[in-house]
Length: 440
Image (cartoon, rainbow, N blue to C red):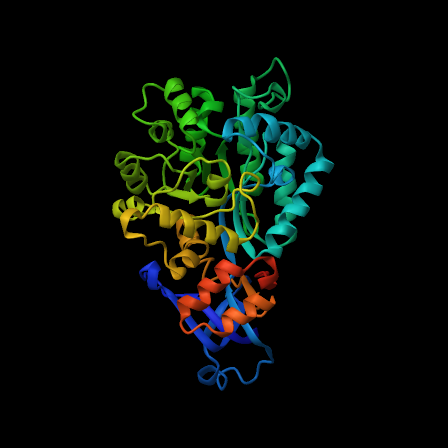
């Protein structure tokens, strides 16, 4: 067992996200192993109240610091780290000019390993402790990321990128033994083998990963849906309704489906633990389909702004009531920092609120990147919070990390002002330490 003393920031269960944060200025966090040996939160609350109960434990005291849940990121591309900040006219030219050429390099195991190490280190440096992440169409890229995430004891999900048409031939899924099975069948065999190797090992999870509907044949999407039905505890991840040209393309390729989103439902790929990035250009039928299926949206505000894709409609999502959370979407996204992502979501939320001029509250923004994102993944009560029983992943924040941040946070008169000053002025310097739950 270990005990930590600092200010505490966590979330009330089942609370309105706009008013969900609990802030304890002088708190005690106690962690220890659960029955399976994983470090979890055993107790938290005011230091004055709990200190007598845990007097036998040495306490690590961090005065002036804030202990908060590790951030949860719903969508990123670890093979795209090197293409961050690449100029392009829009999504499809960006893919063709930058992303596909870089992903070609992931056929080499050594390159995959180096990229995975850098990507995971960068996520941790910015306080991200749980992530759902794309790899490439190369099995080596999946293995490399799982190896690194396992070495760091992380709760991480990824999977083989399924792509058997409408992409450079070198990036399409390849048969391991030409002439014996075709590329589509091989991609599903590879996916199942990777799933059986990694899913549920330590804190790792497999994600069935069609890149997006236009780059998969009907046969590949059908096979992916069959895998999803066979293994209901795995995740599903893909893209939908990010860009109007992409939507038109998908509708032309799948005319029998009532919408681009419905294409995934038609192939059995819309359910609990399915996370779809972007979800910008939806109508209420799509929003209802998301809600009724239990699928969730990964909102990617920095990439949507960068690629001029559009604005996620928060007001309509809340009105219909489907799940969503935040994501950095590196490398279309412009930063690994959750603070930059939350600030961009604030801008997008203001745009989507129409005449009211209101945006997302600071508490709701923080919830979207922690407890809300965990809920979207089906991991509520497991990560994204510091309530008893949650895995003990947390970040140590230093509100005095920069002169301006110190000046502004010292003047914060309310909890919302404190949170908002960190959202607006924070970056990787605000994250003094990232602590990961480890098995004992």
